[in-house]
Image (cartoon, rainbow, N blue to C red; front, side):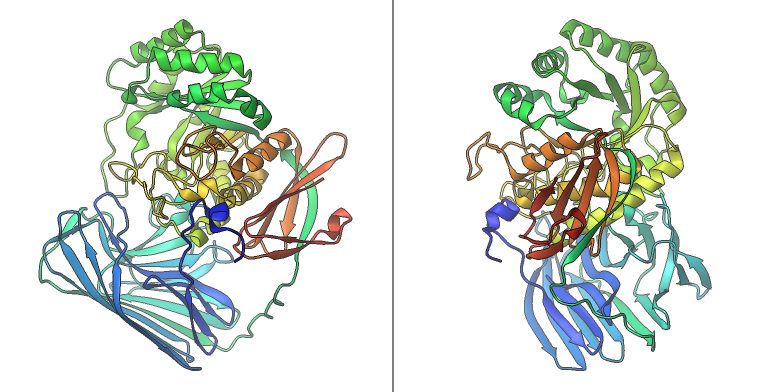
Length: 612
């Protein structure tokens, strides 16, 4: 990689290169003690086998590895290492891992752990990720812990709960004539549909969520788990792709209009936005999404700040209003309406959600006390009778899928996504784009043609539904559930943004919000970055491009390798077609654009390119 790392990632730190393990047709990437991209004959069997230790807020420990030894020849490989995790109270968990693979299609990953002292955790054990591409909705065979075997299917639409419980093994077809059995020993496993969180996988994990958490691993009590993968059959492997073969781009039929683009504005960001009004005008968002949260002390001053910005930058305005639900709902919401009038804030719409619904209710947990949503929405309608009313979840599709709102009372539904709930490596974030069509299809299956908005959806997590708080990230690392992410300031975020818009475009969204204007989720640089404060980040160009395409007819656009390049196309009423391409990789990618009357181009790492 010759491009400056900061330009790509917003940090000069780069991820360690994986070690490719090979044994005949079996390959896997060894990364930070775990296995990624497990393939047989070039076909991905599993996205990952990882030994995961979680803290009480579902944050993931980064084990310190020692005594690493890797051996391999043409027919086998083996890996061994020791590791330890240290808790915030000085508690320590040590474990020893061994990995073995053979050309006969066998792979085992074994871990023996020993807490040196009582060790608190929400989860300690293996997670196995099955990919979704080519597997969603497909036949599988499930063996339960009691030995009962069932022929069933992986869910096509996103399952709000666990599709399979009490798992011992799951077998799927890799390709005609070849199957893969993944067997899990040492504890009781269950599967969740990680597409709920925009992960591109089905995750099988240890310890059922119905059991209490956090829980304590007693000092000196060993625990051992083993994952065994067995590949059988003699089916023909697909033809290998030619190295550096250009990615082809093809256009199809025109469909729904492309959505308005919004930016989220927080009260503390208004003054900076007003000071950079020319940049906001150049960006050109059709919507301003004002975040209003009384639990954070927002009141009349926040609404007056929003009003000043709405006057300075005339656009559609939506108030994202958190409802405390601690007293009479009519009193609370009419009070908000009175403050809006006092502030002189003109609104096009309001979206409301009870404060408690920002926290997730996992399987087996009791729903927190909350007035019926029908009552909340009715009170909001009485308080704001003359503007559009939206609802849904200010958190993620997960929560909307599990607590399905009465959409007949609403003018639109809304939810967000975040790609770093479970993992924060570069590959996982880009792979999360694969899950977005399943998210929108599942939302449409629930809510039909109801106008539909997504966002704010950013790489960093703006609030944590699964713990007490987001993770502070002052050093700009790649960590899950972080309140800021360095890649937002790099080309990486620009490519992810265009890719996101491309993946959700067929859903016919009304509005899409993928950034704020300033701050850690913003399109302008903040203080402390190695560039001038207020200068455009690379994501500025991506958001500006999406703003310019708002209202155009979406044109179906496919590429021959959507793991490397995604395409977003729109057509005006005059027949002009605009196409944005995004390179989702850290490599140069040749692209065949002959469909546009041109030849080829080479897209540099995480580049975005406009055609037309």
